[in-house]
Image (cartoon, rainbow, N blue to C red; front, top):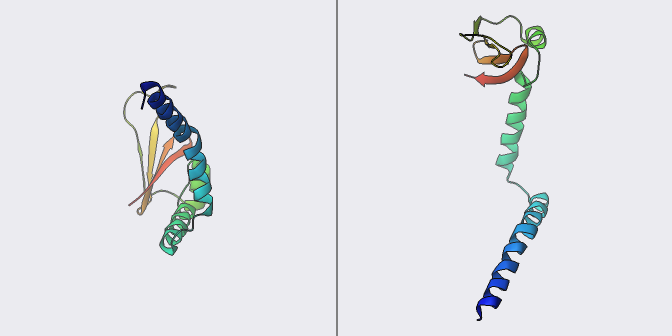
Length: 109
């Protein structure tokens, strides 16, 4: 095969992969059926998310829904606009991390 034809073939295959494979993958995801065990894990993850504070909740909402924390700890060091204070509320089975007044993350122990 001539070098020009090889290059054109390689270029066309590359462009095909770039533009059409993501589309094919998306359509395959829509039609794919997942095993029952994946559905159970997804359901369990949703249940877990409902039982614990979610990202974006305020301190007031967490206190109202989960009560007073067993212990509270603050980050050490200088506090500024650029480096806000991180606060951790420990509830025994989980801890909630706040930036200013908003939930950043919940860790289940």
